[in-house]
Image 1 (cartoon, rainbow, N blue to C red):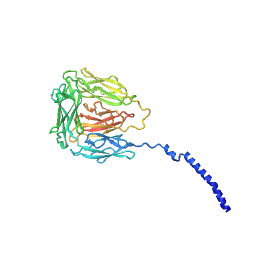
Image 2: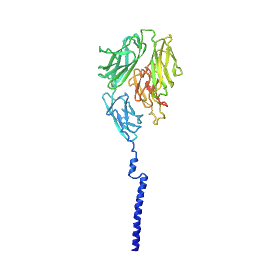
Image 3: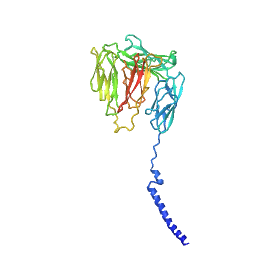
Image 4: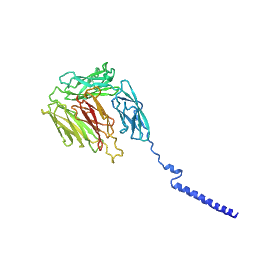
Length: 456
């Protein structure tokens, strides 16, 4: 019994000590961030936006006509996978947030459904459903035939000409009943209509006849100086285009010397720099060749050649980073007649970033990277080749080497303003060869991409 009472006294003494230890432990947990109060100090992670594509729903793509899909949300960079790469191939690694679609040819009336699986770095997946449709081939391109032979293949000032497009299907079968829209792109010309209230227009839509032919009449402005002009035909349903370049020749004056474009302007993004490495091709018409070209600021640009041997031939101007607004080029022909053209190389309006961007610009991409003359055609003459520029830093400069003998670019200035915009190469000569298309962006450092057109 004495031993038992001793044990009782000992345990009775330990109880308050144990309570004190438990209280002290609770204080330690609270001091170390434990307990229920610690949850309130944790910042929840930023949710990743839902991945989806624009436009929503089924996207219609036409054979060999570039179109784009915008990828929104998710965690870039993105990847894409086609379930039918034979009809609609896509790059596995998407440049930026724009996926360029260039479908291969399909049969007339044979719509082909294709599913594109888009995934991001967080594991999200979305499906873009695309229907690929046949796009008509414009047989022999778009032709302009003057009503009078007074100016040869050129359209005399004040004269008229027929503009003709032929829509054909597989095997050259005519496609009747298709709406073809004709547009004046540039030049002193207008489309003649049957509307008494508006006899002249810049655009007109006609329907192909049983032979697949759509044709309109145009008229040039009387006393217009000799200069380049351009017409465009667009299949309304698909957006497929053909472009025709031709010359309006002045016949009412002997001083018919002209240059196109007469003015060109390049504006960068930031206000502390001007473009470098951008190229603009100027074409000289009329007068008496050869022509001598001089610049008011010789060190502001590189000009080649300074002697242009023939009418319709170009000289090329390349910027070197010097800001000038404008530099004037004086063209003098062998008879002493003169004309001029200008180039403005201007800084932008935005302040440059105070530090290098943490995310580099997307890789510059030109789609397609190579293209050949159309099937069944003997040359690239009268064909239009469409390209889309994505990634890099806008704006972009486009040029071709060797330089084609006539105006060959749309837009004519060679400047593409935004990612996802397209440009066209046309009016290549009726000869075999390979043309290299050069695209330069406005980044620092600059990115350069090339594409090829094969006419063999």
